[in-house]
Length: 397
Ligand code: AMP
Ligand code: ZN
Image (cartoon, rainbow, N blue to C red; front, side, top):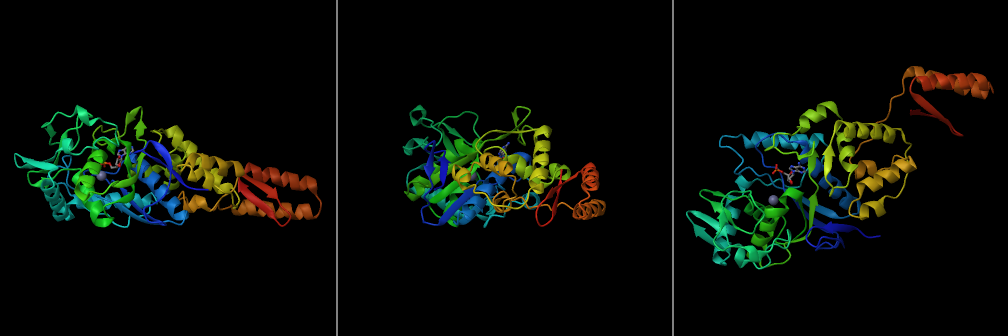
């Protein structure tokens, strides 16, 4: 069996073959630190945490880098980005998301970014205008390969200074604005520094495919002359709430810290793992309650083994893998190692344990009527029992 990954670049599932056998260089676009972490972030970062864990489960040595965008149009001057970053990392920890190997910040990489901008100017891919530097998309013939946007639509000399564009069109974008970098260049600079000029996996939410990731490819391949900059592009389906994308700008978000007050991180992880990472996720109280009930069921399963590699090898199909686990009624070690769910051992109340002991005695004495009566009492307390040769197993019903 071999791992296949859906590559947004080819729009196909492809056999996974990293640049260096056995090693994976992985980069995920991190948060813009101007507010609290919302569950749209949780959706994307839990998905890539499961993918990273599965790659490690498949014995790849993964180097995982996530940037922190602390310079951006959306960040108002005076914002305490260090404090917001600290809270973000705490939210990640509370969601049992494994930490990245490096969390580079834009503000610590100004020298690297400036060097890259200079190189693009020197190579003729960029030009200066009114104190800013723009990338000239018409010079990069492969522009549009990820998003499918056609370069021939480009009107030369049209440019945007803002980090996010209004329309999906090829347009010259700012590498450097007066006194600070544009948004897209940071990821190229950080990837070059921490991972190299060519990497295996670049990931982020679907909303970043255009223009952010398209621009990253253009800058990086223009600067290094190496192709492809990224072998596999992975994008998560966005999280919606009441039919709208959950985002800070729309102010319709639920904070991770608030949801964690009401639900265990395990419930949140199971909720997201129950749909495929590429499909749109819809948040609802009903859905999260279902995950809660599902988790109680998983906790009640006896430990055992079943193989979920064929499901996970098929573009990390977590819903199929979970369906197989539920069908087999076994607590498998992958729930912990891949899904990041630690097992909660149910504590059986003293009263239930006493009734079970009494029932075992009754069975020894072949007093079946008494044993049945005791079973009914146990079930009334919310537990069920299963008789095996060696002992009586108690489960939460
Ligand atoms: P931001 O903080 O908006 O820069 O986003 C950081 C990361 O979270 C990016 O990879 C986004 O694609 C992802 N993200 C933001 N909002 C959502 C959402 N509603 N659903 C899924 N991912 C999201
Ligand atoms: Zn990025």
